[in-house]
Structure formats: structure tokens, C-alpha cells
Length: 312
Length: 313
Image (cartoon, rainbow over all chains, first blue to last red; front, side, top):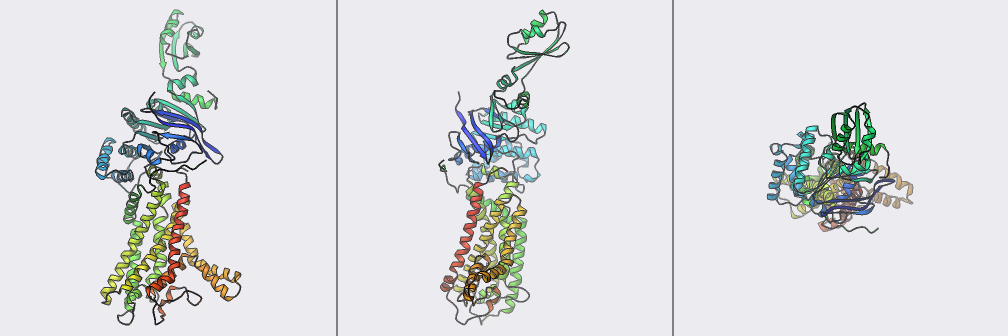
């Protein structure tokens, strides 16, 4: 197991009567992209703020890179890059001036700051607009400027809160590309979102938040297995006798549903395409198509929250 | 549960904040407008004062530059009494809630600085900007005075003038502190500005009346009533500032009490023997420290509110 970068133990935050975060135990290893998923108000942002020492936990503790965010927030914040949801910049200043302020707050010397600012702007494709006022920037450009700001700190951990919210699909896709590139550099990333397919596209592991609790945790396939029963879903079109019974008998098949005449759906714990094809042919059916559907986080999410909060 | 001790300097990043905020103030349209107003006021009152003053007769000619009024205009110090609060409020009313509304607050606080540095940095930047503007005007008045009157100011005049400047900056500090408290407390900058201006109006217009009424109601005997009135009046920063200015700019003032009307306009009457500077300073030492203490108390209130504030709504 890799080094633990982010760890919380019974982390709790209470606002009056509302329990925003409830005994959260979280572990994120080095180099991992961890997705924090959940509806609005499920405690994602509060958790992030506690990790940065920007809000005080009511109980429990957190460690980021071995530092206590409550006692050593400066140590944490100089090593962690944070992109808040709907990041704001000083509109009347240029992109470069905004970054230069951040560099000063981080105590970077002028030559180092200048080099890093240029690199970061270049990398985020903002070099051409570096001396334009941020007031003229589009949402996507601001978001990229936010990442540029993070990069100039040379962080070991990056925390992104709803980074793709409000971006058009093209900008969102680009943004995911950026996250993948960060992962290549072995930077640990904590990503909060409620856009599931995006989380699925970049995250190694996912934690599903609901009412302040992390109710599910694991890789997307693991979650699918827990919530959907079968993590793999096969769709089979075959003309001939009813195959339901035969399919159900295949070891590893969790459920078989007949979606239409001659159209079956098999949920399974592993990829059973070969077995399904063999069973269908042996039963004398004419196999027209057989497809494997990747488990989707969307479904996990939907199924989980539709079913209400149940213990898994 | 024991409160965890924070590590690292609370002032890290302070000067970066001061530099950024001051640059913002000095280039903002808002400050530009206020500077023009102050400059205009200084020019007009100085012109009026110079019309009335001719060298020779007065021992403290340069101090008269600030205090000589001609109908219908009040003297320069009279204008400062409301221009300084206005500038100070303009510098502070959107300092914290503005960051909040632009969504820059969480991004800035995610940098390795404490909130202390942000708040104090903003406060100092406001105070420095105010000091810069006032000092520039002060120098301009003295300079033009030398030019027109043809005599240099004496050492005592310069010293008194400087103390007057210090008192004015401290008076501005109070209103800046108040504006910043409201900028932490209220999410809408307009609400914060209005609250600060309302407070200023209250002290300028209503406090005097209220003090009279309360003193009348509570006091036993005439002397007691006057004492109570004086005490209550001094709870207002306007009174403290007026008294401090009066003592520094008019060496003839020997005491504040039942006999001294609190208006600045009365600076004209003169007792033949002026008080030495040390005595004038001793006379208004409580007023001066009161202004500075008020500034510190207001900053402390803002500080506590800001430390407890949640970063998100």
C-alpha cells in the first residue's frame, strides 16, 4: 500500500442542529485520484474546508501530508492546491497580476514567481491572454487560471471542488484532460463532483457521500458490485427459445431480465460473454448480438439514492 | 476540548496584502473622486483663509490656515470632520464582503496565510492610504502657505500641525475600523456602507441632542448635568476629534469644560497667552488615546467576527 496522504478519523462538523459531516473516515494514498461524490449538501465542501484548516471540525481529526490542518494550516496550505467551486479572481487585475499576488502570498521570490507564473500560464493555454483583465475571461478560462494558480505552488496534493460545474462540454473534457495530466505527475488529487461520468472517467477510487456520511467507497467496479449486485451487464439478442432459465444457471450470473422478446439482460459479477454465447447457441437460439455494458457510476448513484439510505 | 495551538506566524503574507490593497485603493475610481473632493476643499478653504490672513499679527499664522473660516464656508478642519469619515468608510465598507461576493475569499485563504494577515493587511492598507492622502494635502497647505505668506512656519507650528495630522488619521482609523466591522458582518457592501454612514450621521446629528436630553433627565443639579453631558458627548468620536483639533490648532485653549463650547467654529477667540505645546498635548492626551483606543477596539471586534465567520454561506 502506498503512503497515506490524506487521512481523517471520525471527522465531524456540526452547524447548529445540522450534522454536515458525520464521523468521516477517509484515506487517500499517494498518487491517487479520489472522487468525492454526492448530492449538494452532503458534506463534500465542508470536508474539503476542514482538510485545509479553513473551518474547524467539531470532533475528530484530519491529517494532510502528515500535518494537522487545525494546528499547522500554513504547512498544509503551502503544499496543497485548492480550487474552490466557482473560483473568483480580481476582475480589474490581469491574469498575471492575479497570479503574482498568489505567488507573493506563498512567499515565492520574484524570479521564481515569474518563471512559475509563465510556465503555469503557458501550460494552461493562457499565455496569450496573460495581460488581459480577468473581467473579460470566460468561465472556462477562469477555471484554467485557477489551475494555473495551483500549479505555480508546485503542490503535492490538489483539491478540486466541483471543477467542471458550469463548463461547456468541450471545456469540461479539456479539464478532465488536465486532471489526467496531473495524475501522470504523481500528484494526489481529491476531486468533488456530482457529475458522475466525469468522476468515473478520471478517478481511481470514489467515495459516495450522503448526509455527511461516506456511505460507499471503492473503485467504480466495486461500487457497482455492491449496489447493483452485478458489476457487469450483458445484453443479448437471440431469436429462438426462451433463454432466461438457461442463462440464470450460469455460475456468476446475478440476475436475468427479459427486456423485450428475444432481448435479455444479464447482470454478472464478471465478464460472462463467452459463457452466455455458449449457452445461447447450445439452447438452439440464433445469436444476433452480445454486448457488455461497463458499469456506470450514474446507475450506482441513482440506484443508491432511489433506494433511500440503506446500509450496505 | 483543548483549543489547538496554531503554528506559524499569523503575519505571514501581511505585506503582500498591504501592497495589493494599497495599489487597489490608489488606482480605484472611488479614491480618485474622493481625492478630488479633498483637494477642492483644501484649495477653496486655503484661498479663503489666505484672504483673511496677512502676515505679522498672529503668532501661529500657519495654524490659522487650517482653522480660518469665511462665511458661508467652514474652515478646512470643519470640512475634515465629515470628509475623513467619508473617505475612511469608502476605504473599508466592502473590504471583506467584497472578497466574499467576488468569490476570492476562499481562494486567498487557501494560500499559506492566516486570516489575521488578511484583515490587518486590509486595515493597514486603508489607514496608509488615508494617511497618504491627508499628508499630501497637509504638505500642500503648508507649502502654499509658505509661498503666499512669505514666512516659514515655526518649529512649534510644524509640531502642532503634525499632531493635528496624527489626530486626523486616528479619527479616520475609527471610521475605517467601523466600516470593516460592518464589511465582515454584512454580506452586502451596500448594507455595510449604509450602516456605517448611518452610524456617522447618528453621532453627527443626533448624539448631541440625545446627550442633552439624557443628561437633563438623569442629572442632579446643574454642575452634575454639565459633567454628565460632557462625559456622554465624549463617547462620540466626533467630540474627541473636535477637542483634539481645537487644542492642537489653537494654543489659546486651556481647558475643556463647561465654559468651552465644543464647536470648532469658535477657534477665533483668543486668550493672549498661548499654552506651550507640551501642555496642549497633556490637555488632549485622553482624547488622542481615546481615538486610538477606539480604533483598536473596533479592529478587535472585526477580528473576532472574522475569525468566527464561516468561509461559505
